[in-house]
Image (cartoon, rainbow, N blue to C red; front, side, top):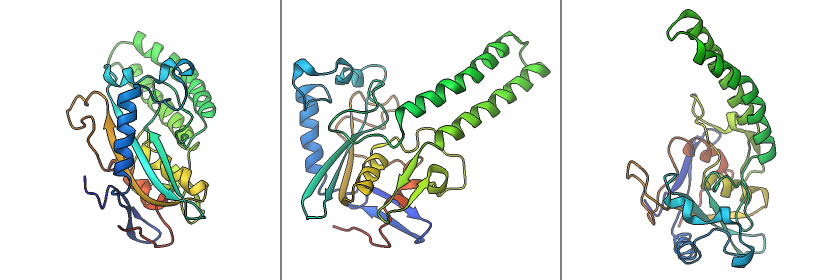
Length: 252
């Protein structure tokens, strides 16, 4: 991972790449790694007797494997350093954890949308399982299920609101700069969570770094303790908008 360009994206508005360096954030990431290693849970800000068993790091070494963690170094309006931290997606099903930035989406609205969608998807799946494979009706019901699934995904995407440092807000569809399908989970990674929180709270971003923690991925492409740039598929297409500060690019 390049220290000078770990988080970047093309901005359609400015027609240039906005980026954020990683050097200032890396020592804070090492400190976070030490805390994860020592406490073996992510709610290490509370006493052990008050900890939530779901927030143990044991699940990161299970068949579910590890996940990304990130640190964003910011500056408030008084010039005071502010350190934000995030974990990607959900931790063992938990969306919000004290001491970590929240997700971009309201978890209750997300879960409710999924549950309503399941009421349409599951009966179709059950029906498809009873039909002769490759029959005309089988193909028709597969197509119907695909349309329903796309509709549910569109409703989920509509729940996400992205903010940047120009005090602008856009939907996921508006912020995603590539003219192609939006991958599932876009907006749930560390960088979008961190930048969105900073933008909402009037914090100036200075440096960001993300590292992998837990059992290495099945492909071996991500290994515990290693730093990685924001992902190309989900993050880079939205980071150009999120990092926009009126053509101001932060450099080391």
